[in-house]
Length: 216
Ligand code: ITT
Image 1 (cartoon, rainbow, N blue to C red):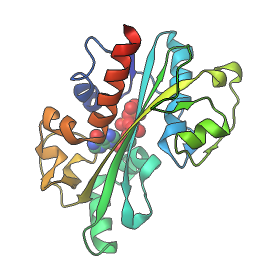
Image 2: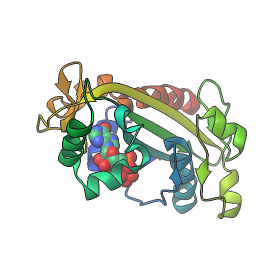
Image 3: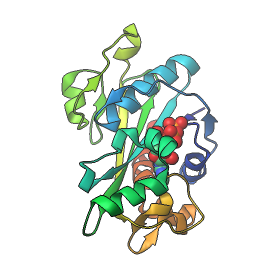
Image 4: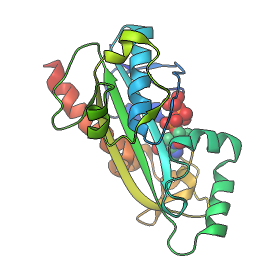
């Protein structure tokens, strides 16, 4: 049974479209400090696999604001919890002129204790070459959990570009009300409409295709 590791009910709603019979695992893995999402998700997948002993899918996402050099990026959850998305929107409006471009990124990290081919999606083996293949800028924190760090983790990336706008819409979660894509905020879309264009939808489309062929 595949376990989708998240504490976020909004992510589970969106994931269901891609994964039949997926079970949520409400497990709060350690989020290491890193400039990119890949190493954070890979490390979380190893930790969750060690905890559950079943195939694991970790979903790490973030909002990268161009005029803020990608902030809040990997710190998106902390910034959402402390400032809130409306304050983020006001800061963007006050500090950035022009179109206020941003992108959402999602990384899905899969671990089932076995190894995989790296093509076309990268495998994080917790070494420098794998991190480079995954586009990682390097994790801060080191490897202190022994052999768990040698577990290979397959990574699936999804990105969507948009811009930061005043909050609109009642749907979605997190930063969705302030993220507009093609004239509509993610909070104004249904889960199906959002999945069709979103970072998570794109990552899941890749993962679901790969996972089906792996299960054959
Ligand atoms: P888990 O780590 O338990 O999965 P989380 O909500 O902390 O839950 P992330 O670290 O991936 O998940 O999310 C970082 C922040 O970005 C957090 O505030 C989310 O609400 C937000 N976020 C993630 N995906 C989003 C999406 O599709 N739309 C809007 N906000 C999103």
